Image (cartoon, rainbow, N blue to C red; front, top):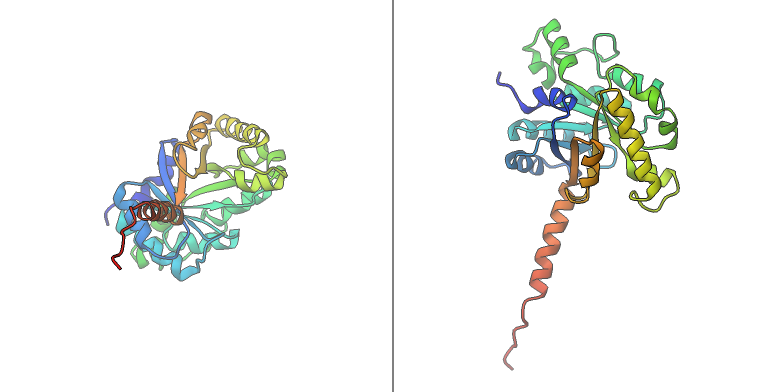
Length: 261
């Protein structure tokens, strides 16, 4: 079996290589294949806020393999971690982690050795039974990344303990939820910028990678300055809306053609 983008994603993430990704919000494989064909490094399937059941995620994992792109899943809860990894996800992004205990539980759900991940070699992650028990366990534990979202004041208060949890590969700056929880009207408010800087300093002190999202690269430039290396740029829906808006405006600005009486 040839190597796929999923195999090296965790290593590249932990090495803090600059990685470009995008949210996938619609349960169709086409956007994932297109982004892979363009050369994006990863897609982030949004189970938390998108219309994704297990069958839809399974289809997108197949599309990720076809497109040569790493497929991550932002799970709706830690209970979804097992299914996402069994279907071949290169990693999971876990929202609403506010304590070291929750971080430890997320890591344990993603790991066989020393963890609580239920074993089966039959799904895609085990090459449908082609990998033996020891090989599957070793490969899965070595390649599945775990990213923890920091998106609540409680997480900020417990940040040092969360980041210190072994097996956490990266922190994700959840500035939207954090803004709402802090009563701010914008993720760009000064208090949010200070929180982002604190998260980034703490992650770097512990050797953890950093992920964040921005509507476009220009809007995310300040995040690179803080040390973010993996940027989730917009979403498939956002790309469609922007391109469609531009074309509609171009159509509406065409000179009106007079119709002969």
